Length: 149
Length: 127
Image (cartoon, rainbow over all chains, first blue to last red; front, side, top):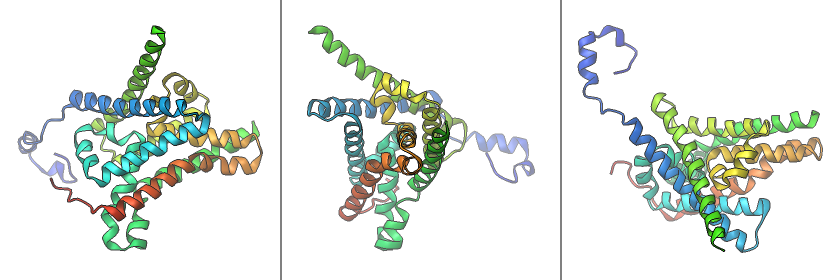
C-alpha cells in the first residue's frame, strides 16, 4: 500500500492490505516484453528486406519501414487490437515505434468527441508531444555541439 | 547458396534479440519504478540521442538493423544523426537537421492517426 498517510496506519493493517495486492510477475512481464518487442523488430527487419529488394536504400529505406510500422500501429489502434496486446505485452508494445503511433492515434480517437480542433488535433500530441519537444531540443544541442567540434 | 539463408536468419535473430532486449530493459524500469509510458518513451528517446551523440548507437544499428531502429531509441538516433549530418553543412543545417530526419515518422503518425480517428470510434477502455 502506498499513500501520503501511510505512517498513520498500523503496520499489521498495511501488511493485511498489501496481501490483497496482485503480485507483480517480474519474470513473466519481462519475458512477454522481450517476445513482443522482438517480434515487432523482426517485422521491421522483414520489411527492410522486402523494400531493399524493391530498390530502396539509405534514408528512404529506413523512413519507409518506419512509415509502414506506424501505419500498422495506427490501424491496430483503430481496430481496438493494440490496447488488447498492450495489456499483456507491457513495454513490448510501448517502446517500439508502433507504440509511438498508438500514443498519437489513441487520444486522437478518444477526444474526437470534443471537437476537431481543441479535441482531436490538440490532444493528439498529449503523449507524443513531449517526445518531439525533448527530441528536437536534445537533437539540436547535439547538432550545435558537433558544429563547434 | 545455403549460407546465404543462414545469414538472413541470423540477421532476423539479431533484430529479435536486440529489439526484445531494449523492450525488456524498459519493462524492468517500469516494474521497479512508477514511471508512466510517456516518461519511459521520453527517457528511451533521449538515451538514443545521447548514445548517438557519443557515436555509440551507430554500432548497435550496424549490428542489429531494425532491432535498434524500431524501438523509440532509434527515433532519438535518427534525430541526433540528422543534426550531426546537418551540422556538417553549417548552422542552419544543425538547426533543421534533427526534425528533418524525423519528419517521415511525425508526418506518418499525424496523417494515419487523423484518418483512423475519422474512420473508427474509440472503444471503451473497460473490456
